[in-house]
Image (cartoon, rainbow, N blue to C red; front, side, top):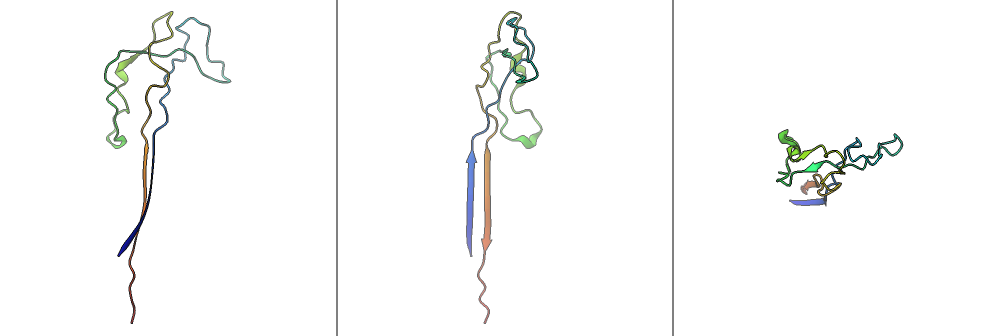
Length: 101
């Protein structure tokens, strides 16, 4: 009996955090073309508690660590400071040679 296998691992895409309003008062409303605001939410600095098991029904990260940015500020969170879940992909096959007499 033998086995053939192939696997692929990749990191996840960056999680992009934006606030689509203009709380920073910089006049940077999304315009419908690029649809990106420049405001980020405020980050409390607590644990993100990343959830690496999407089948358990919980959110991927602790969203209570984020709140709307204060008026007149762009927000304290980095736009992309962690990545989403990665990919673990396995392709396997089992083979058996049977000799017929």
